[in-house]
Image (cartoon, rainbow, N blue to C red; front, side, top):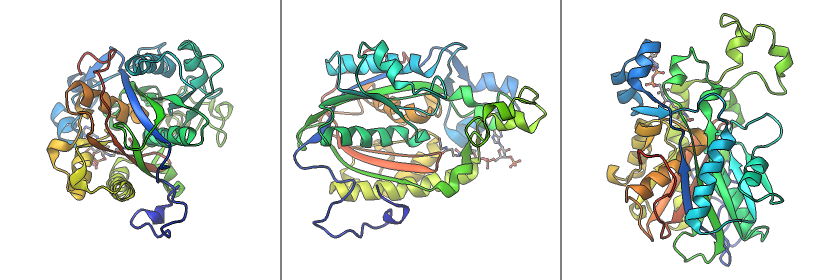
Length: 371
Ligand code: UT7
């Protein structure tokens, strides 16, 4: 897909194969949305009891008011199953040809979580696999889904973005515990015509592995296997303890996120043949309301066309964009035929954008009561 250098300009000759451009004949068409967030809520006030922080700091620096978190014993597949079932119901189908799960918090390091979710949704035997692009995972999943449909591998599929990101967090780390929450969102995509409402029009994807350490769980993978960190992993004063948890260099991530989401959005808009004025709803990764405002401002998209639900759920990683879409449907912000721009930035570093029109959708049948 697009390299970092392709962000500002697309130098490919017209007439040659252009990655990110949809096939004229067979488009992926979105036809159902579902969402699920776990019931336990952590408010900013709750966090002031545990950390040296304030409701005012969290609201003004991030826009977050509360986040939903999984209880012990609840795993990502549990959230994914509920959101997936809701999306299937909204699309009016019981089964699909493939299940793709975007997540960074699989139930187990091995195997992938998608096959378990597919089986629990009554689709044993269906191809199912995970995609890990951290907070860009849902947009990467959209591209994967569109590719499966364009290649004729699947006529319809379920794409779920789900994360129990709080299970990665050091419970003593104020900087991350205040930001992240858990949840799942899902969409059903089917093959259809490029002019139908719901059609996916264009993508831009990119990555920069030199920035890998900005967002990372240092230990527990093949570089530092779990058995190598066992010693000291329970001692909060040891570096083994710190390295077992998620870490983020927030300020640097902020800077890269604004730059990459802006550049990637411009590329996707150009590939779709749209301008920023055409965009009815801008749905960016819900990490920080200031990042959303900064990117929308750079693009020239007014605040009333920016979807915001980070206040209600915090940063839910791969679930962030589909939860925002479900929120927009429930709150009447999305209507049939609207032009929608998705964009995200996450660990890797990865980023990506997707331009699509919106289909006729009913409000998600199972979802967070706060939506
Ligand atoms: O999902 C993947 C992508 N992730 C993102 O896009 C996240 C991007 N980053 C951000 O959203 C912001 O950088 C943060 C919300 C993480 C932090 O906000 P910031 O305005 O960049 O704050 P900062 O890290 O520059 O810290 C400013 C001050 C520091 O104190 P000093 O050193 O100035 O005395 C921090 O220790 O704020 C302090 N601080 C806090 N204070 C109260 C950091 N977190 C908190 C907190 N409560 N929760």
